[in-house]
Length: 157
Image (cartoon, rainbow, N blue to C red):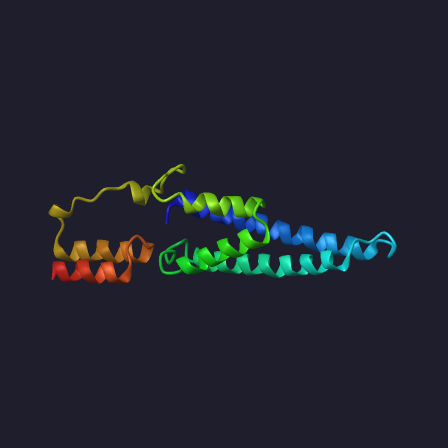
């Protein structure tokens, strides 16, 4: 997973949590108002629905980037579900806008990559064992899927 995408998703999670806190504050303030000056009950019902949906978005996004984003490709459906829920509930929220931006970031790198990612290994000078270790490391880091690992392993053997 791209570091920039991961950081934007984490920021979207933080803004979702802040949105949950704001909705809880709004509900408490609604109940503290005089009954004559309260807005309609639908407002509070919508706030409860929004809290539940934002909790679902936080859980889905957290599961999508679990283990430092290593399983992001396998859990892409969770990311897309969180995006759709976020769009339906509140299109103009900061978290939704960040998630929409992350959809279009695939190969852009705005954040400096880790030292391990910048190292280029020449495969021609490695033994088979070293190539297999390199493939295992890529699999554990989430750079390749299990199917890609098996395919490359069969080529080596």
